[in-house]
Structures are given as structure tokens and as C-alpha cells.
Image 1 (tube, chains in turn orange, brown):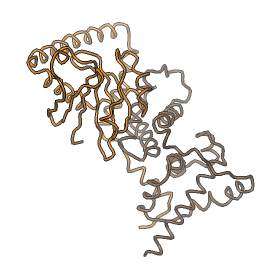
Image 2 (image 1 turned 90 degrees about the vertical axis):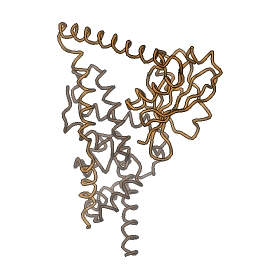
Image 3 (image 1 turned 180 degrees about the vertical axis):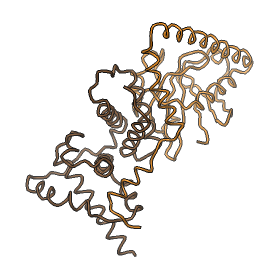
Image 4 (image 1 turned 120 degrees about the horizontal axis):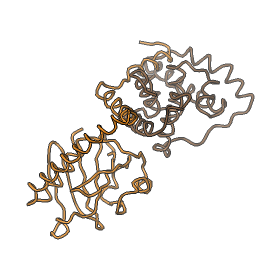
Length: 193
Length: 161
């Protein structure tokens, strides 16, 4: 059916809407700012809750690590898959690895531009952690629809002493490959999204 | 300053006009909001305009390589002719939704942004120049190129039918 171009364009954009989940997520991001600007009493209470949560989280991660101590590769696969499913957005949107390196100032290693990732397009990066060590989480876009998250961190102690080469596995719907390159542990997570 | 649901939906549509991709539009909006909440924004006079500018800058930073840099040169006479003819004619163009969608998909981000402001926000070319920054001649140039393209596409479709 023909209509005025203006009306067609207006209808096309009017049909594009955020989902309820996406809106809830945006409000949650916005409300984090509000939490910071509450009274001093509320801030102290929030800090106590945060401290308790941190202790619980550390205990949980330590327990998981202990349980998987025998097979560190599997522990890393599971950790990467778990982080991938959280679908956190990059802190910095950039297609330039050097720019991401510049933004992630607390990394204690240099990001490596792996030849195994040449077919992917960098979208951005953020901080993460692998086995309790600071890591970079890089979001890449494949030529077809879909994204991969790539993790880089220094080689964990348990793998340094092993004859470790490549390893891959599946966990919670996520396929993860890990390898080491130029002293850095790489992990690539892809899912059916 | 807190944005409401309507604000987020408006910003999302604007992001979509730039990226032409729903996932990218959402990513752009979310990452810009994360930067916004870190600002001390209570003293910003026009938060909606300021945030829109942040979205645009975020888009430019990420998609800089894909943006067209070369613009057609227009002299003053051409600008006047376009001002007298294009704005009115664009309002009169009739097509189906599929053609309109196809044209949006082929258009560059700057043109999509202009079309969004024209169709959904009702801004004139003069207002767009004030909002977006480029001179009116640049806005007219992009509209002129777009108009040629869509009329060609409509004619082609009529011939095929």
C-alpha cells in the first residue's frame, strides 16, 4: 500500500521499540547513579551490603575453583561461559585494539592482536577476571549475525606449569576455545545468539 | 536528571536511525547511558539535547570509518533552488513501505539521521542544521542526493510492475 514517504519513514521508526527487559536494564543503569546520591546513612548501609556480597562472591568463586582444581582448563571454560552469558556491554566502543588498551589502564599486560581473530571485527572492551586475575573482555562481531567474546589474561599459575596447548568445551550453551599466545591466555566464547 | 520510558524509546529510535541495526542501537544507547550516569549531570541545562549529542558522538567514535567524508559542492544558486524545490517535493513523494525501508537500509547514517529528524520529529532543514551542526547546504546536499535515489527507485519499481 502506497503512502507518503514521510508517513512510511515515521511508521518504520515508530515500530522500533526497546523491549521490557531492555528498558528494565536501562533503568537499572540509571538508578545506580541514584543510589550514589542518597544520604550518608544510606550510603553506609549500601557499603555494608556490598561488602557482604563481595565476601559471599569471593567465597563462591573460591569454592568453585577448589572443586575444579583437578582440571583447571574446565574451570576456565566454565568461568568464560558464565561471563559470556552475562552479556555485559563493552565499557569502550572501539574497533581499535590500541584504544581499548588505552582505556583499560589497570591491565598488567599488553593486549595481543591474535592472528586467529583476523576474521572478526572488534566492537569494544571492558574489564573482567579469569581465575581471580584481571582480564580484558573484548567483544567481536562476526561477518554473519552474532558476536563472540574474547578474553585475554596472563597465563594462570595452574596452566603455566602444564603442557597446555589448545582446549575447548561447552558449558551452558556456550562453546569456548582457549589457547595461549605470546604469554597470554586467550578464550573465545560463542553461543547460539 | 532521570529519563523516563518515553525518553529511552525516543533515544533508541534515534540510535536506530544512526546504526540501522537494533542490536547496535541498543548497545549504543546502553553504553552512552553508562557514561551519562558517571557525569555530574544535574547542572546540564538541556539534558535531552546533551544526551542526544553524546549518542551521536558515541556513534561517530565507533563507526567513524564507515562515515562518508566527501560532500558534494553546492554554490549559492544551487542551494536556493534546492531550498525552493526539495523540501516541498520530499513531502509529496509517495511510495510503499518496502521501498521506504529499502532506501533507509541503503542510506548512509547522516542521511538516515536527517530523515528521522524530518519524518519523526518534524524539523525543518534550518532546524536540523542548528541541531546537527553541519551547514544548511550540507543538509540540503544530502537530501538532494537522497531524493534522486528514491525517485529512481520508485520509477524503476513502476516500470517493473
